[in-house]
Length: 222
Image (cartoon, rainbow, N blue to C red):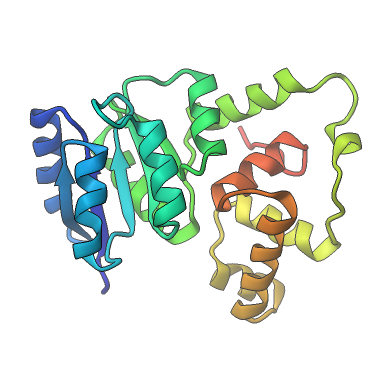
């Protein structure tokens, strides 16, 4: 089984070291790097030869904060999926980071099982949103909308197939699972996913989920 390559970026030494021990205790995870800051991590990445799948980053760090690091990673290493792990869990910040390309946003007081679940889900599907993050996204969408349907403001046209695929993406299906569900090839699903990202001007799969919720194309199950 291929292990998921994980990196940690957090300036709090004890927390970072404890998190590193946790990651090392999980069989399917492989800790490749732990850095005390964003610049240190970016400097280390070339030597890691594209082996980092998921980066767990803090928001408050000296020199380069989480917002800046997330932006740099998205621009320079778009294949690395970012999980924000922060003490700051206000709705505006969660939505801002997802809009900026973060694949997940968790509170630092989450438990081990949820963090491991988030890493595995982000690796598998491209995003992981717990109820707190989903509520933040939904409330942000409601705040920006009025009583009229947001669909009336949708400036792009999605085909029936694209809507089917978008709904399955939101339900955390990966490309292979979507292909099985719709009797398509994985390559065809990948093409539709890429077209959706291009059409909607989203940064990644997490952005597609935010887009679908914002425009009422996917109802959050509660």
